[in-house]
Structure formats: structure tokens, C-alpha cells
Length: 276
Image (cartoon, rainbow, N blue to C red; front, side):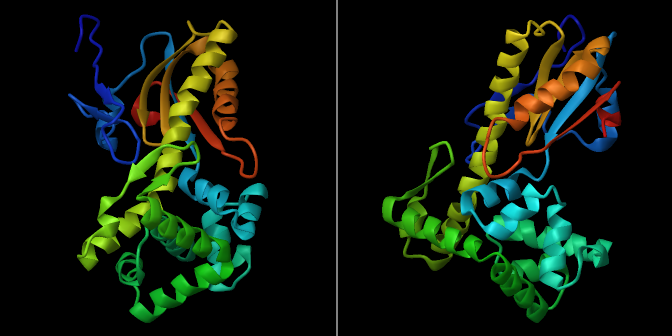
């Protein structure tokens, strides 16, 4: 800690292959929930969290242009509930907790390039059931399959993938003669534009908020503390919290405009552990 009893980390711009920042000495992006109450706001300030909701699934909808997935977000629905209804062939109000949990596993499994066997293990189901869910997902959202096929075909040809903002990630392993190396690189290439675009959005959000605070002469009211994955943490003067929470949410939401709303959840508390 420094002379003011404040703890500082090092944030690395190039600390990950996906484009997200990493943190070290100490790693403040990996603080267990039980320890977070030890991180308190300065006197007269609140600890405020701004978190992008389901950012990677939204990026998938944006990049694939799948009408079914786009419609879910445009209607403001919960994506896991909506996908559960589609995959399990029931109405939205018939979706129970277990169905939603499974739909969440399927959604993130698809994003991370999971095959049927990995899906089976994560769902805790049989291979037949996992195959059925997997197939049904791509029947329900056909443009996602064709989008992934295009990403792999293009990456094999040029050796890299790009995020929505044009940042590249190279995959020399796509030309490997070893099948498992090639398959691993294909999975990573499928996921790279999604995770990479999400990382770009969060970094652009920091700039957008900073410029808004400066333009409105509010930069002495709110201070960026940390970025943790899809979340920005600020210390905000107590009296400014009601005004600044919606302003920062709005600034973060407008980083990507068109097609998909990028919803941001905001919360304030006295310490990190209490921010819900």
C-alpha cells in the first residue's frame, strides 16, 4: 500500500491473448467474494460497479446477425430464458431454473467452441441429449453456424481473425499437421472475435466515460479504480452517485450503436463485497 493506505495493482494492456487487460502485483481481477468486503470506499465516496450484461452473447448476435438472437436482445428479454424456451420447445413462462441453467451452459459452450463431448460434461447429461441440444441450437439460430464457418474459413486463408474494431489475433496453429493442435486453434479462432470485441468494448467504454466526465466537468466527482473482465469499478462522491450512475451507464451503452443494445447494470455500496 502507499502512504495513503491505498493498494495499487499493475494493469497490463497486452497481458492476455484475447485483448483483455490483466492485473498483477497483486492480481486485483481475481479477488474472492469472501475477501471483497475488505476493499472499502474512501470517506465521502461510494464504491460503484458498472457491468455489461451478457456481453459476449450480445457480441455474437451483433457479429453473426442472426435474426432470432437479435430479436431476443431487441425485445429486452433474458437471453438464457429465451434460448431455453427455443431449445426445449416450451413457452417462456414454462422455463424452469434447471432449463435456464442448461441454456446458459449451451450459450457459453457455443461461444467457447465447445464440442458435443465438452457440452455433455458441462451439462451433466448423456451424449445423445447433448447432441440434441447442440443440433437444436443451430436449427434455432442458423446464422450462427454459418458465421462460425466463415470465421474459420477466412482464418485458415489469411492466418488471423479480427474483432469488430479490426484488432487481429494470429493463429499459426491452423496450418498444423497435428489434428489436435489444428482443432484447438479452430476453437480459439471461433471465439477470438467474440472475446476480443468484448475486450475492445470495455476499453472503449473507459475512454467514453472519461471524456464524458471531462466534458461535463465531473472528473473530480468520479475516479476509475479497476477493470475486471466486463465490469468497471469507480469511486464516486456520495452526493454525485444518483446523478452519475445513469450518466456512466449511458456512456458505456453507446460505445456500440446499432442492432444490439449493450445493457449495463449499475450498483453502489460502501465496499466491494456489498456491490450487487
